Image 1: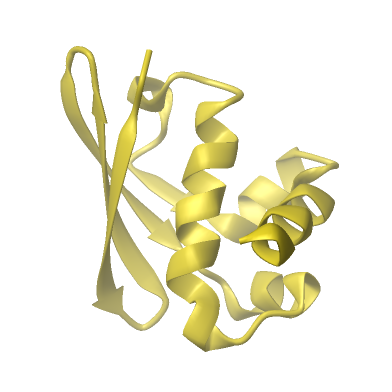
Image 2: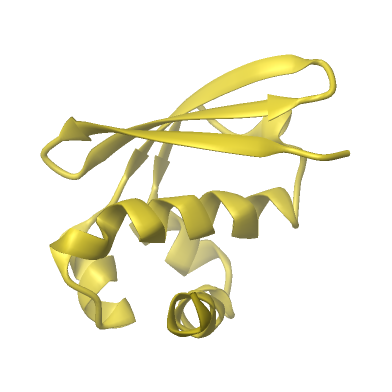
Length: 94
């Protein structure tokens, strides 16, 4: 299934993500916690990219329809051992 993601800043490190998939559109709020940005060694200016790559990362591991309504990237980093390394690699490649 092919997904498309739209990332909209809501201010204060919060983003609304709309994920299109074959059955429609789902929305989730993402929080780009500054502590995770520090671990990824990126600036706040790169938050949108971090969120976009995080959505893609999660979509490779589960259906976007199963994403919670609120996703804190700190929780993602705690749940997936390879998240920080994988995101760092993706951000360096883009």
